[in-house]
Image (tube, rainbow, N blue to C red; front, side, top):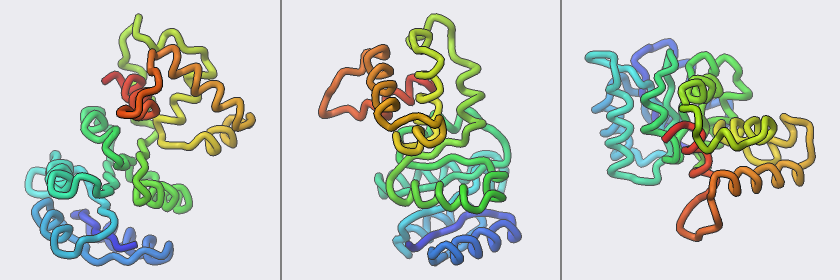
Length: 211
């Protein structure tokens, strides 16, 4: 796997490159601003980009805007976005786009971070649990989610983190069959019937996140 890193902190940029190398990834470019990210992706055609939300010159959302430009040019390109803080408005831009959104503190747990990198590189979506918690706290009363049982909410929360049924079963210490039953119940209560043109799992997560 070939990776481009966009991070203005030299220390974190080099640290990420080292972690990725240890995990079998090759960093083909490491840049410090949004325009350089877009150029590096178009030039090197990597398999994944890891991008800081806040980069020069204003340190607001340059990284996110550059990431979205990359996705406009390469719609299915995997991107893992890192942020120092929980910034809820960005999750709405990212969820369902086959990307990852993690707090930088997650990098300290190397095994968990590398698992997220591999998940996003494979086309999955990984959303930081803390972002999920904050988005859940903002949802309106009377929403369809109120129909879910406490266990179904637990399962949906783990789905929103990008976890598979197998991973959810392991986390909750239940059988995979039990998880599948809960997922079916979630789909039914959220009125997400089978449809070949829709991805019900993503739609359920979007409902959970208040979209």
